[in-house]
Length: 507
Image (cartoon, rainbow, N blue to C red):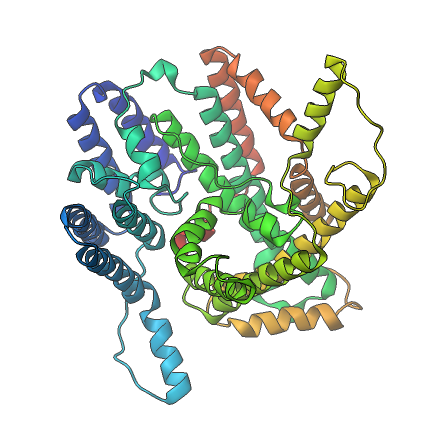
């Protein structure tokens, strides 16, 4: 059941009013959310409802056992068993075929031939289950009633493609009793509207106009088509995935739940580290807190830090899919982070994170308050984002980071396509080095406009988006509904016929 479809519209039109109608009765409300979530998930394949229920029962029992265990050794054994079960489920359904084929290719070993379907969203609810048990073990949260945990693990807005919401973020929202009038309707509507536009108008258009052909049969096209195919895929995967999470966050907000942000203008990043603070932010935080830090983080010295970065990002790549292209993509990200960290440490440059708009606003406030402000001077150590030298450095960093990320997307797209895998990578990179004399056939003014326009939007200051959100919040409900309806009509008119499946559904 895809968000931008008539079927889901009918489903949500029933669930939303019923949810607010029964919300004053907590148990009935939670049962309604659970039933709606299981109906939503079972729409794809009802056979996997048993898997979701089993994951719920096992992890709830494990969390309670961890809480009640007396000695640290028993607690470690219990949490290890629960995490092992979750990883076993993920391994069997997602990686069995990959590991068997790899062993066959390497050693000629013939494993049992099993046709195992991949349950949609298994990677996401598995990570949420692991975080719940581990947080109980760390005394960062407490076990809740089985019904509450079942709603948390199966909540339909983010069940199949995130964002990865932690129990400590979701369960307090489940206990609130806010009235519908306190819901941020304007923010929810703007998120859903933005997500629809990203998915239907941008992602689906680029997928059909250039990306599908450029990566499907790269040998038939020249370097210009392939280069814009890579840029197009960078925009497509961002618009597709961030569009989904925008809609998920907006739908959850209408139901009374606030989810964490998952994207923050990632293609404006000035470094690889900055990119991963902006891209799939809930996954980045999960990998940091449940993999990188337990491995030792940066506490063991320089070389162990590099090792931990490589392990974390390589496993993060493998999480995305059962293909060597994903493993290499994750390894590439780890190498990028490690090299960047080494260069930064060697040069002694402090890693200063800031928002240029916030710095400007602080200085403007000083001017209005009458405080003395020194004139800006070109300074190689200045962290000020609008000193001339720093501006050049930041834009050079953005340019290099974007193309590093795009190179990684070649691996990622090849893994997502399956079948040809690394062969597609070789064909695309080979075409980029030798196909510049071939006239482009996929690139046209509309494709270029969509790609350039989508990347340019990444640099709109936060102040502008905040002002736009404030304007929407001032509209009366009937006018907001009219604006949203007109927007949906525009999206349908501009988008191609039919809605393709979200890219991250296969992960």
